[in-house]
Length: 251
Image 1 (cartoon, rainbow, N blue to C red):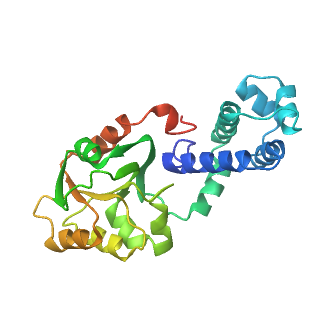
Image 2: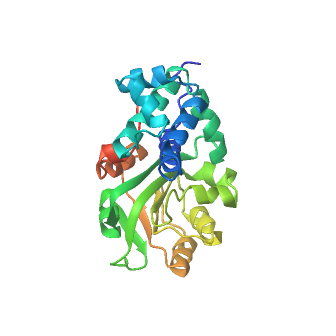
Image 3: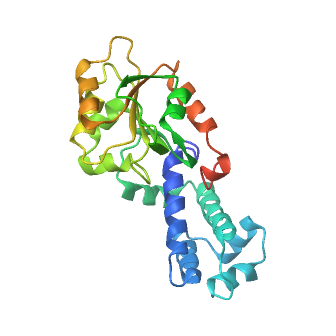
């Protein structure tokens, strides 16, 4: 298996990067947190310094607490750890990814918006048709998750379902490969935490009236995306974000 074949999904890398960043920022002694994560990734100070294009003494000063890391340094530091891990075939990221508890292939894309969007704006991006409920004017969407509906519904437990909501439940939960729309809305119905809206992609026949009724009962807008394919759907959503704020690292 090549390094590219073993590469974790983008959303997994993003979640891990943000969790590492949060751990460093909220640490009482950020320098110790920097060292902890460098050692976890089996990287030497020299490895990290070379990747960041700085002197080894710079890394040492931050780890000893002689300098306080800002947001830019933390981002570059984490990028360096991820780049080093990528060169080695992602052993540490893959190990961390197991703690997320999501089966591979369920999440196709997961992003947080730099600034929240209105439901109207999301509907436009996905070429959507609103099937139930008038769109709440003041409801904001802070991110989106695109999932394979068959894999999500057949494999996820209730606890794992929460992971689809990312950093906040105020997001668009988008189910692809949908036939009639009933199963996604049943899954949302039994969850105590609701997304800002549900988007279904795939039906070529009439959407099941039960799906529309469940959306009405939960007061969750249900939208049918008419995007030609999943790739088009995801590309449109990604264009609404700024790449610098989407992920810490990409290859």
